[in-house]
Image 1 (cartoon, one colour):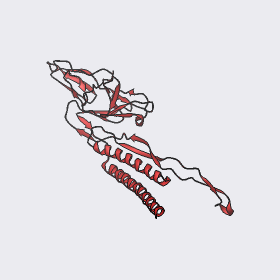
Image 2 (cartoon, one colour):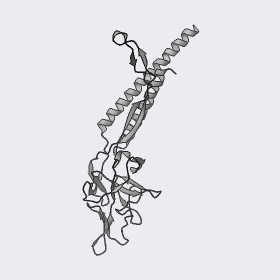
Image 3 (cartoon, helix red, strand yellow):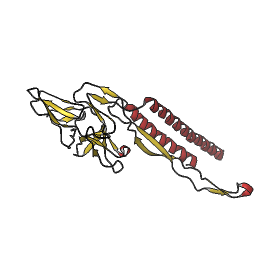
Image 4 (cartoon, helix red, strand yellow):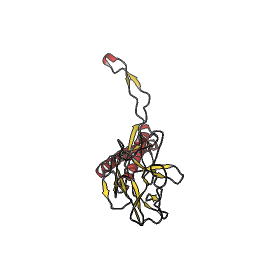
Length: 264
């Protein structure tokens, strides 16, 4: 395969990956608490440069080697806020500001999410829409006592249960954590993130503390996908793919012409 063909194929692959990222963003435009991702590309490398007498008075000048194409360098998430949407659900909760809810994953590890679409399971435990237990600020489950007449979350993050006498009891407080580097978190699907060495360890933060996010009960944070930005990125990736495909097509035509000349 000619060098220019390999370069064009690398461009096609990189732009395809960019389209994949945009497609995932657009498909989650209505997902609660979703954070959009951005794909970045970088040049692969260069062939050895040449030295030629093209400087003043024929002085040798080092020329940059021919590039060898492009590749996907990374896909990073953007953690800008989504629009607040009032729901009236007594167990829904939104975060305004930097922070994540803590949930217990099936393997027992702690996951982090911005999706505050909570409810109670059959045992009265506060869980996510996917059924994962929501952790309190102590790391324990939040369970409404049996016999409670009703329950709700308030703007302080407290889960309140009302007993038969009409008295409210604080079951516990929803745990909220922050990270030194949100961009280092690993996305695991189902609106969940896990900590990595790049993100740093989770730091629990109390409601009302300096830098703590504001909790809003009876509301959810929408996706932060910017539709106009995503369509712009889609067009850019499509055009890049098409142009690189044209290079491959042109080389196929050149090779066909060469084969015809040899067989003539």
